[in-house]
Amino acid sequence: MRIAPEGWPFALPWLLPALLLLWLRQPVWAGVCLLAGVATALFFRDPRRSFDGPDDVVVAPADGRILKVDEVDADFAGARRTRVVTFLSVFDVHLQRCPVGGEVVESRPRSGAKVAAFRPEADEVNEQRLTVIRTAAGEAIGIVQIAGLVARRVVGYLRLGERVERGQHLGLIKFVSRVDLLVPTGYIIEVGAGDRVRGGATAVARPGPRAHGDDATR
Image (cartoon, rainbow, N blue to C red):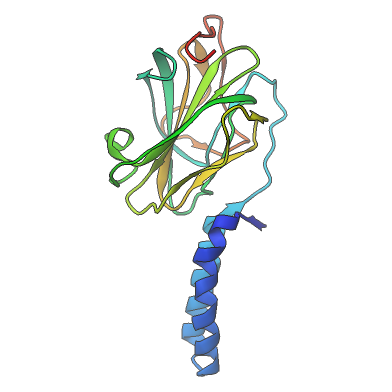
């Protein structure tokens, strides 16, 4: 299985004490260190994912469990958006993917505090990064990567003006975190609270009869 490059600085430091303990004939503790290193590397795993559905379907940007689906005001769109909130535990893949294809029209970080990612106020106070992708139909789709209590850093891979494909790597969050997906209110949501989703593979939303583009990011 592939590992995101950002994971190796966290995983490799476990190897040296494992070798030292093995040399000191402490196989149990050497095994513990080796296991810790493997577990850390798996946290940054990059499984192969694909989705073969229609081009206008929005897929999950992250692995995890849906905490809630609601509506919020989105400053990037100048309008309300339906928000799908995904919580990532330490057991989930923490590499995020583009939920749609299109052009990156906004990518901005915001510094902040570090409260538990499942708390309601996490999106208001925590460190985060907003990425907005404009689809070929003119829809502005937002993805907010939100750091959690023990998260070290939010990493964004995309540049303004870059053309991306659905399922392409978007970034990662180092350790427990949350990812919010923001779609137009006219979209039909395919998931609900408690559902588990897989980034780049689970259909989350699709345009409904009332879906429309906006001019805020054009």
